[in-house]
Amino acid sequence: MTQKTYLRLMLALTMVYGVVIALLALLQTGGVGVVAIVGGLIVGLGWALTGIIAKRPS
Image (cartoon, rainbow, N blue to C red; front, side):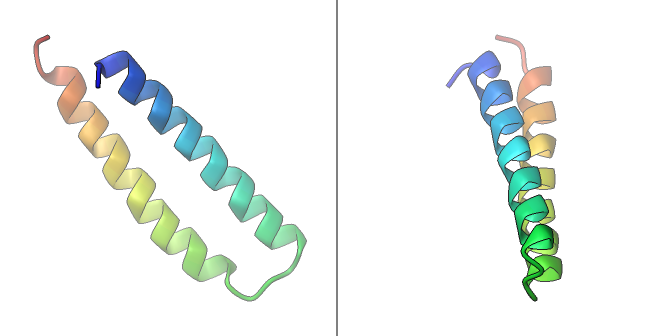
């Protein structure tokens, strides 16, 4: 997977995460906090890996 593809994938994943949290909040479900924490950790780790991959020379 190229750096550009990985960046696009992470951007899409972050956007989907935001939409899911917004929908859960609008629907007033009880699991918003748990989903926000778990999803935030996954997205955060993904962006951390993106930074490591982006620094690596091609």
